[in-house]
Structure formats: structure tokens, C-alpha cells
Amino acid sequence: MFKAIACAWILLVVGDFLSTFCYHVPEHVFGHLHLQTHHSYKKNFRHYAILTLNLQVLLDGILGALPYLLVAAVLWYSSPIGVLCGLLFGQFHVWWRHTSILDWQTPKSVDLLCRILFITTPERHWQHHQKTNQGYGDIFTFFEQPAQGWLRLLRLLRLRFSHRIVSQ
Image (cartoon, rainbow, N blue to C red):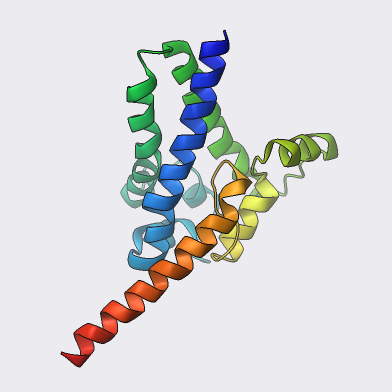
């Protein structure tokens, strides 16, 4: 049982780290797929969740989930049950964090528990939809500050790289 719980948490923490720092933040700086499918003001709820057959939305979801799946493959031999539980919790969290558009209000007791466990609530995730410089870490809020630093560094690198190309 301990091994299953440990694998689930490792999957979620490492997957969220890799997804945040290798896909999500770089996509905010260098890409546009995630910004179009997840942050456009012209989108309605079905564009925010994985409940659509829109290929761009599905591709963005797959690219965001790929780090979790890679970690799952590594952890599978330690605890298949832990991996499945971690993936199920991750999917549930994707659906749950997108309920804010439906005027969901997280109960105070659940909100307190999420703060203690550093878990992103729908309200916190909605901040990221509205202000793309805030609310990083799809599952865990402790990735917020490092992700903002990574975002600033990548923007600086993009700016320096673009100036070199222009001056040549």
C-alpha cells in the first residue's frame, strides 16, 4: 500500500514538474498552441476541458500529459496500482480545476486541505486563465514561484535571441 501511494505521489509531483517546466512555461514563451486553446478570451468551457474533439485542444492536452505518461512508464514496474491511481487523480484534477467557469465554489474545508497539500484549486487555476503570468503548476502550487522565474528567464533568452537575429 505504501509503495502504491508513493508511486502515485511521485508520478504527480514529477509529472507536474516536467509538464510545467518542459511544456507549459516554454509554450507560453515560444509557442502559441497552448495560448490559443487554453487562454483565448473567445473560448467557452468546452475549449478549456478535455471534453472536446477539437484537434488543437486534444494536442495541447496530450503534450501537457506526456510528461506524466513518461513518468508512469518508469514507475509502472514498481506499482501499477499506484501509477493508475496517480493517473486517475491527475485526470480528475484536470476536470475539477476547470469547474470554475461553471461558477464552482470550492468548499472552505476542501480549500483549506488543498492549501495544506499545495494543491491547485479551480479558483487558483482560473487566475491562470485570466492572467497567464500567474498560477503555474497544474496540480501543485509550490511550482508557482520557480515557474515564474523560469518564465522570466525564457522571455529574456527569447528577447536576446531575437535581437541577435535582427542585428545580423
